[in-house]
Length: 129
Image (spheres, rainbow, N blue to C red):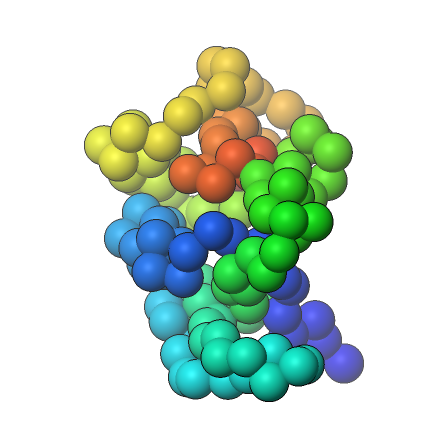
């Protein structure tokens, strides 16, 4: 058994793909037309880190309740934890892309850490070590 996908609610598929592919280096593994439960068109878009692993299903917000939750799916807590092999390279990509860094780089018992906010408002930990 393994965890295959986690949904992240986003305002726009293409903007989300650009962030995940262009900034984080994820791969688009699926992008196909689909329909909502009541038959309206949508896309099935999945991004995964290089080499596979648990992916994100990019779900465009559908309606006011989902739109309100974009960027705050966990009530202001760090939502996602991205562990990287080379902290410096990943950190520099965030800076070059203009991604909002929250606080300073920290050394914690579990590794080097930088909190950042994605373009949709979600908090992430960039981790190495």
